[in-house]
Amino acid sequence: MAATETPVCNFGWKAVDFDLPGVDGKRYNLSSVRGPNGLLVMFICNHCPYVKAVRPRIVRDCRELKSHGIGAIAIMSNDPSEYPEDSFENMVKVAKEFDFPFPYVLDETQEVARAYGAVCTPDFFGFNADLALQYRGRLDASRKEAAPENARRELFEAMVQIAKTGRGPREQIPSIGCSIKWKQR
Image (cartoon, rainbow, N blue to C red):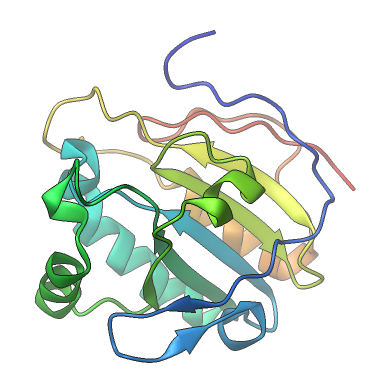
């Protein structure tokens, strides 16, 4: 399996609930983050060079997805003792710097990531309005510390399609350092 490929998982299963602290001092769960047309769950490493490179794009896309009724949440799920950049204090700084349009929360135990099948971050899970899984993707941390100039927006376009139709694309489409396995409901 190529480094960017993600194993096919149980499409159609419901999003896993959680109760996690946000960098804004609030607590978040599925009911507080889901949108009327769907939900994007992101497991993001602050220390990942590729995530650093595409972070502005993630912010841009999530702002736009909000206008389509797609909610989004970013969950940190790494041990900050190994990665100081993933500490809660650093998350607060990064969230303020980028003015994230989504809750930025912390799962110190990584239990939520395991429940979603995120063996490591950064992973992306897209759910329809019924919170049924429609895609799973993963960024490749081994790529260069720069976003491709003309990278396509398959992750974003897939979520817009989910918002409009309740279903993801029929085919797998390699994205920016990400492979997505698609399956219809």
